[in-house]
Amino acid sequence: MSRSLISRRPRFGRGASVSDAKPAPSALQCLGWKPFFQQQLTLEELSDSEPVRVMAVHRSQLDVSGESGDEPLPLALLPRELETEQRPTVGDWLLLARESRRPQRMLERSSLFQRMAPGASRSQLIAANIDSVLMVSSCNDDFNLSRIERYLALVREAGCRACLVLTRMDQCDDTSVYTDALRDHGDLPLAMVNALDADSVAPLRDWCAAGETVALLGSSGVGKSTLLNTLSDSERAATAGIREDDSKGRHTTRHRALYPLPDGGLLLDSPGMRELGLANVAQGLAATFDDIGRLAEDCRFSDCRHESEPGCTVRAALESGELDERRLRNWRKLKREMARNNRTLAEQRAGDRALGQFYRAVQSHARSRKQCGD
Ligand SMILES: Nc1nc2c(ncn2[C@@H]2O[C@H](COP(=O)(O)OP(=O)(O)OP(=O)(O)O)[C@@H](O)[C@H]2O)c(=O)[nH]1
Ligand SMILES: [Zn+2]
Image 1 (cartoon, helix red, strand yellow):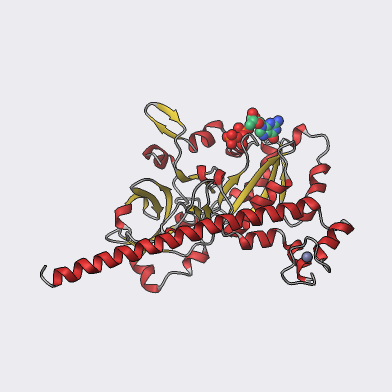
Image 2 (cartoon, rainbow, N blue to C red):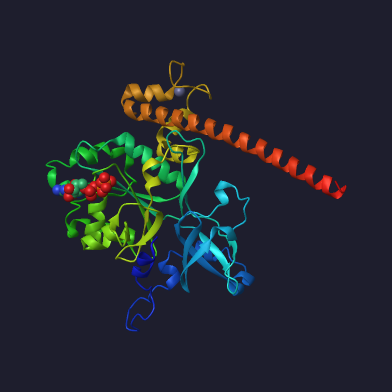
């Protein structure tokens, strides 16, 4: 994040008027600090350290923010041999020693997005501690239930709340097509909006309130930037806020970073969110397709593939019309994709382990030679 963006961030919570009915959230609460994180601190840590949130990740440093404001944290201060999952990513909370400003530890995450990019063989952390994801699609041909189910599996696996936003309601004569299509997802919050109209997007403001960290998912052109502009009440706030400025003018190089929204929330901007692949999303898939899971429990064979086995309750549900063929196909497709990605990851990890053992063997050999005075 450029310095200009950091300094553009509004000062948090301080100096609110005493007549306010609700106490103004503290600086930390505005950054997303919640009881979940507070509970992880020991008494000693409470007095000797300071929680800071990772606002942006750069090649050699993190931008962190806490009660004492913004500061850079050189990556060289972190232990070198951290597993991918233990490396801080955008949204993480770290404890810094109050005096030395050295990182002490990273707090447990409430949610985590990882990416299995197409063609990549390792998973990569995208963001942590995201509270909710607005999954954006439109009331037109972009609407695709299978894609929504895919997003849902990812969002649920990450541990975030999901809200489905359908834009272009103003261009649609009959929105019942979409509500009907979503009848199997009755528990999924749904907002149909005209993304260009402030009143219409008002129901989304709660998701972006002070202390909330949100991310957007959706294909190109569905209205993500438009939504942000309208929620921000001004073109400049959203588009300037998610792009980096420099003296040569605006360009679109983007870091993974959290940016303030006018309602007080923080927005994750990460190109990686566009390339989320399915890996290790077994729980998210099970939660998204819990109806199929329940049906499968009653199949005669516990390893039923729901193809031509006798006593298959899944096929019976298909035949009776209780289960949609498309939904079953999508479940199979997403499971196959996950299995493929998991295999690649497992191979990669085995390779990493072997390499680690080799390095350790070389080091210990070198040490013993030194001790022998070689
Ligand atoms: N009428 C109408 N137009 C909309 C709505 N939402 C978006 N648009 C228009 O759709 C076009 C694309 O919207 P964007 O906000 O740029 O889409 P995006 O999702 O940010 O696209 P990317 O930046 O490519 O990911 C713009 O011209 C918007 O004005 C809506 O609810 N109603
Ligand atoms: Zn079956």
